[in-house]
Length: 100
Image 1 (cartoon, helix red, strand yellow):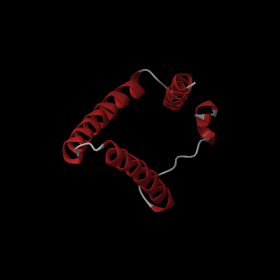
Image 2 (cartoon, rainbow, N blue to C red; image 1 turned 135 degrees about the vertical axis):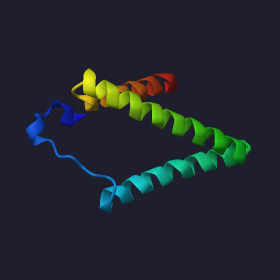
Image 3 (cartoon, helix red, strand yellow; image 1 turned 90 degrees about the horizontal axis):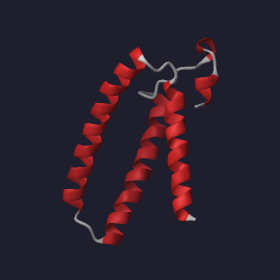
């Protein structure tokens, strides 16, 4: 989100498709999947059906995000990092308010 405020000339593009960034992203994804797996074990939910639904919805939403994001990015929004950062902060604030 901070990069959204920087001029284009000073931004660093990080390629997460190889090297250390790929390993870090993989570990973060694995930790998330581990947490979901533990949750299913405690709730005694059907893993196969849930995994299929989660996979299908995640794939569909990723497809929508890529297509919608490229269209919006080309035509309307010049700083998508800001919108993503604001969305994550809004979700965190909502979660905190519900937990209090």
